[in-house]
Amino acid sequence: MKQYSPQTITLQRLLVLHSDYVNDLQRRNPETRGTYERTLREFMRWVRLEPELECSAKEIERYKKFLLTKRKLSPVSVTMYLSSVRKFFDYLVGRGVLVSNAAKLVKGGAPIQQHTRKSITIQEVQALIQAIERKDEIGFRDFAVVKLMISCGLSEIELIRADIGDLKTKKGAMSIALQLKGMKTKERTITVPQDVKDALKSYLVFRTNAKDTEPLFMSAGNRTRGQRMTSRGLRERINFYLEKSGVKNGEVRKITALSLRLTAITMMAQQGASIDEIKKKFHIVKELTVRRYLENLI
Image (cartoon, rainbow, N blue to C red; front, top):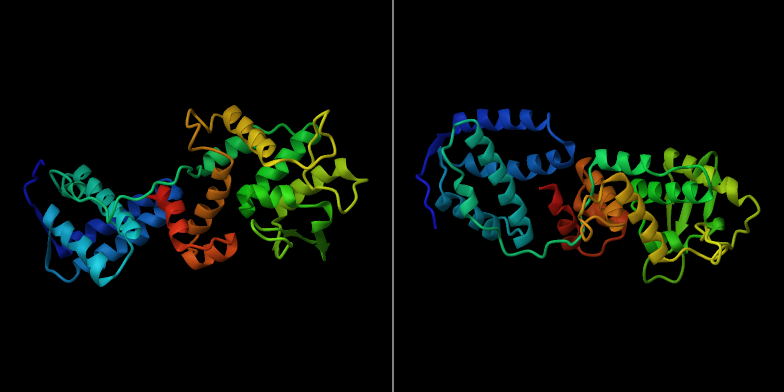
């Protein structure tokens, strides 16, 4: 293994460099900024215990041990926290403060199972939305589906189980009752944001005579007209727009319909939501699942 010559940085200088780095992040893509700042704060608190930092693999290993034993973080979390240190050291190398990035020699807490799907950026969301032509029932339906997945984080099963009667409007506010995976009744109700409400209202113009028991999102094909959309059909429509917009960009297995739900989760995390808040909103049972979803922020 290649060895880097240890370098040291005084605490006073490191604090200034950290401040510069945070300011530099403000000019970067907001998709990653929140996680970088949050996880790096732990490292800076740890650094303050010493008058200077030795930028060596040995020292980063010591920090890793601290995260595992003192902070008692999970291996997945440790991997995330170490990643932010690597990014910071990359910045220091770019500034000419460090000759090389010793943090790259230190592996994460444990090999983690990388999530097979990933979220998309705000720019990609905009490209996806613009790719949906709203000139007929199918276009307006697909637009409403995508808006619900991105803005509300709804899953495929929640969308295809929804009926016309699940939509309620009271005092101008629209809500929708949802049947979660594994549930037999529609126990979850969410308030629909204004932009999603507008998308649904535009689609429902084509469904003016529909009964409350009819599916909210209905197949519009010649042979399947009137039937509930299937998970496969919904995925095919979203993949069509992901390819049309260029968002998929060859990443067939990583950018899928699930990416839209993950995008809603990551956007909530970027706004400062805790893991518990994300678990509650998106009905996710395991904290580890949320952390794996958020790995792409690093």
